[in-house]
Image 1 (cartoon, rainbow, N blue to C red):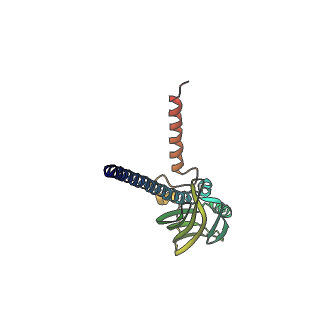
Image 2: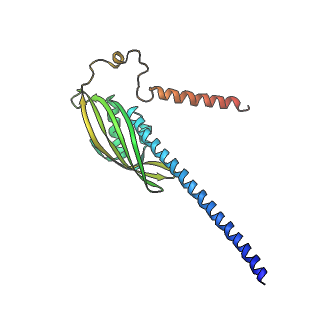
Image 3: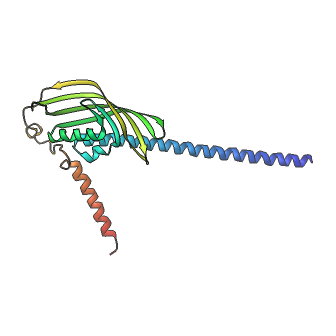
Length: 218
């Protein structure tokens, strides 16, 4: 009887160790999955912020629209209201051929839950264009985008945005044309669809498609 008990105890111990090891392995896999998911979520949020910059700087409405959820709200200094209204506001600015350069840095992402994140992003923006009196103005703006991001059906976009302004500096606007100023530094950045980045994308997509068609049996 004693021997049987000892054998039984040893087997039980092995089983307990095996179960503990299995639980640790499952926990480790779950933790790795959570970490990978969080890294992918962070990258998706950053990508959305960069799409916003392309939309504003290149007057690319599709890129700008892709950064917001349809029911999003934007408190954007001169404009406060729905994201759709802000896009319409931006379209009016696009028509003035205002020149913008937005650069985003110091992106701090804090997850509220797996589908919501508070995101603070520092921005530096150079803007040049006509004011209400059609006088050419150039300003340097620095501040932060304080955003509530939401993940819906696997995609991250802005649900709420408040633009916080930390620096404003008016600069003398140039009197010469861009062609004169840039000289041999070509090509010059332009709006959608003329900017060289779109030619690059279109060319590569076309080459990939033609290559795929050439490999397809007929």
